Length: 139
Image 1 (cartoon, one colour):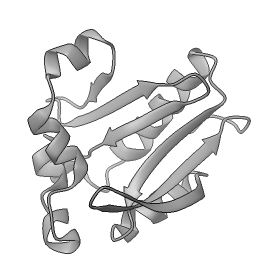
Image 2 (spheres, helix red, strand yellow; image 1 turned 180 degrees about the vertical axis):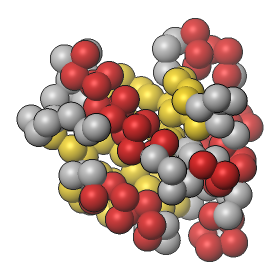
Image 3 (spheres, rainbow, N blue to C red; image 1 turned 60 degrees about the vertical axis):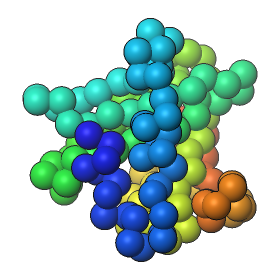
Image 4 (cartoon, one colour; image 1 turned 90 degrees about the vertical axis):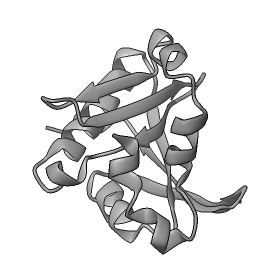
């Protein structure tokens, strides 16, 4: 699912996106058992990978299958992530995106995420976002 959602990024950024690399290196059973992976769709096509930190919920990966783009799953997934953070009593959500993925940046900003910083994380030029959850939920 992640490969299908992220494959188009390879040509633009010049290497496999971090979520694709993480998927190949990850022990998915351990992520699921730890409550870090959530999915949406019927059939399941849109995964979300989360990491709970002391002061925020970190969105490691959100992937929308190409066939579902533009039909609303991304917004619903972001809404789920924000609801999950609120349910855990966390005040914000943080997430990175590659600097070359301008459409992702527009989506994050449309849903109220603000740029925190831009930095190199290994080979990835990333823009880091956050959303303080004092605003109403998405959806």
